[in-house]
Structure formats: C-alpha cells, structure tokens
Image 1 (tube, rainbow, N blue to C red):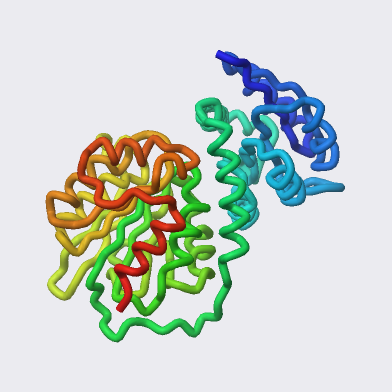
Image 2 (cartoon, rainbow, N blue to C red):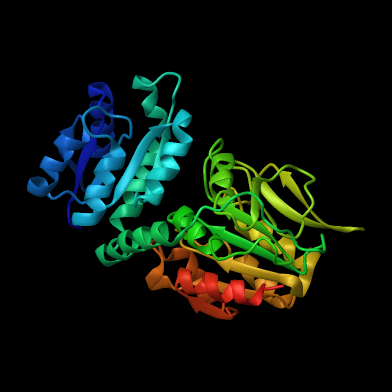
Amino acid sequence: MREMRVLVVDDSAFNRKLIGEIINAIDGCRVVGKAANGEEALRMLGSLEPDLVTLDLEMPKMDGFSFLRFVMARRPTPVIVVSSHSEKHNVFRALELGALDFVAKPSAAPGEQLNVIRDELVQKVEMVRALQPSRLDKHARGTVSTLVRTVRRDDNRPLPLRDLPSKLVVVVSSTGGPSALVDLFSWMSSDAPVAAVVVQHMPKRFTRTFAERLDRLGGLRVTEAVDGDRLRAGRALVCPGGRCIEVRRERDGLAVAVVPPDPDDRYVPSGNRALRTAAIAAGRRVLSVILTGMGDDGAEGVTAVHDAGGSVYVQAPDDAIIDGMPRSAIRTGVVDHTLPVALLGQRIASELKP
C-alpha cells in the first residue's frame, strides 16, 4: 500500500501537534508538513505534493476559504476540514468550495479535547485513502459548475395549490452529499406537488444549518425535521443528525416521526429506515434517490420501495465522489435510472412538474 502523505493546516500549534500525532499513528500515513495559515500551506503544497490536507478555516493572512479556491482551481487535492461546532455555516461554505468532508472539533475547549475526534478523523483519512484521483478532479469541476449555476432567489416562492403531495422524494447521501444535494435541489421547483425527506449522514448540530442552506436555493422550502411534522407539497425535511426519521401514514396525509436510532441501525441517520417506512406509508408515490457515500445505506430500503411500486434513482458511480452507496443500490437489481447528479436532478424535476 502506497504511503499517504498529509499536510496539516491550523493556526494553533497545539492543534497541529495533536492532529499530526493522530495521523502519524495511522498505518501507512505520514505528516509531511504543517502550516499555520493558507499562504504557508500553498507554498508547501507544490513542493510536498500531499495526498491529503486537513484544514482549519479561521486563520490569519490567508483563511481556509481562499486556500480552497486556489487548491481546487490549480491542484485539486482531498481536503478534510477540521473546524469547531460553532462554525457550521463556514463548514458548508467550505464543502461548496470543494472540501470532501469535515470533522467537528469541540468549540468550548479545544486543545487536548481534540482527542475526542480521533476515531472520526481516522475514519475520514481511511476514506480518502480509498478515493481515486479522477473522482476528485470531477468533484472539483462539479463544485465550480454548481456554484456558478445555482441562483439564490427571493422568498416569494409559489406553493402548489394542493397541500397533499402527489409524490414523496426520499434522498439518502453521505460523504460528498452536501454538494450533490445542492445540485439536486437546485432543479426542484417549489410549486411541484411533491414533498421530500433528506437523510444525510451528518453529526448533530449541523443538519439545521444545512437545511437552511438548501432552503436558500429558492426551490423547495427546506427545514430540519421535527417529530410530528406533516409532509406537505413544496416542502422538504432534513433528518436531524444523531436521530432517525420514519414516514407514517395519517388519516389526513403523511407525517414524519423523528426517533432515536435502534441498535440494529448500522447508519445514523438511517436511510434504510426512512425508505422502508416511506414504502409502507406511500407505496408507488415514493421516488427514492441514492447519492454519493461510503457503505451500503439505502440498498435495503430501495428494494422495499421497488417492491411497493415506487421508483429508484441512483447517482452514477463514476460521478459520485464515493461510490459505495450507489454501487450497493445498483447491485440490488431494482434501480430504474442511473445518471450523473446534474442529469438526475433534471430528470427528477421533469417528472415532478405540476
């Protein structure tokens, strides 16, 4: 196995030391450089040619956002943001600029408490190790095109005349999902008679901010789900991090239950649970979508959707930054359409027109 070379960028010397120790302890990984700001990191990037950069965002001289713009335009490199819980908006801005994923470090007491992120950081590094360079190039180009095409619209969005949705879209995504979801949702119109549920693998405290960012795209009205929320046409609900979401049939329509994870849930939030319950509650009205991500969440669920008469859409594996979830869904043999995410958004939007 080829050695993975890592550049650590953080304005805190203590954080650089601790993150470096975590990475150096991973078999086959080595920290080849440490930088205190984006300017220093850019100088190191060309000479050290790292396979991965861990990046703080708030730094003097050149912040993480400017660094990301330079890197993705000139030398696309996997970047994992290591940022505090208090910088949620900054994290999603970084993902939109091309960062692959993020690890949330404690905001109240950094320093030694960074040890609490050890397991998660190791998992993200291992994910990058499995990444093919060609996928990163596509991710960087796709991020730029999405940002150029996405237009923020005002809040005077028309809603469908009927409150009850004729279709229920259930989307499951993981690593690389935030950017893919921005692309997908940018095609969806608020006046389509459709409701949506989003299951994005994401930590607690970040899903509300992510829902707000999707809402600002100006299509479907998006909020973080609350237990008992009704599924209404023209609206989307994002499952809160650390919880699971179920779709339930009620006498006057559909609603969601936001519940704790079960011991049997391999992923939290669980796409499988959302899809299974949607299939039971809405049957052929369900349109399921599996996007980029590691693992196989959603594979069991799309089988239930297919068996109930619903449809199954999957992001093309060679278009996904991480192809584990799309490939697992395709292996079920029940997928109706496999397309790059931009074409997926167009295809779904055309089917959802009022």
